[in-house]
Amino acid sequence: MRVLPIRYSADVEALTRFYRALGLEAGPASRPGGWIELPADGGTLALHRGTAEEAGRCELAFEADEPLEDVADRLRAAGFEPGPVTDEGFGFSLRVRDPDGVWVQINRYDRELYT
Image (cartoon, rainbow, N blue to C red; front, side):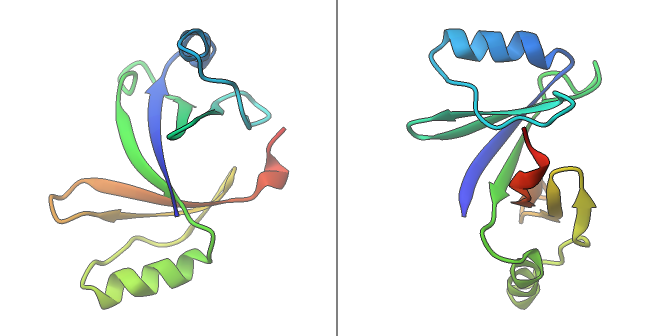
């Protein structure tokens, strides 16, 4: 599983220019442009279009390389109740609250949906 922090922004293009100026390179992006991944040596930063109220918010996400139903089963067995597996524009996701009550997102990407 790969760690993927998600940074929300009302202006993904400007934020992409900022992080590219810091030395990150542009990676996979959604066709409509509301999502871009910026791979780095130590991981990947994802930028996601959000509302003005969401701008600046960060979310912890993980990229799974196995069916999310398997991840959900492990979480339930450990005493954590995940939400349903949801069909998204990028693949599938599920959310679960960690012990502190913070939502964590687990994604399984369908790279055929990317440019």
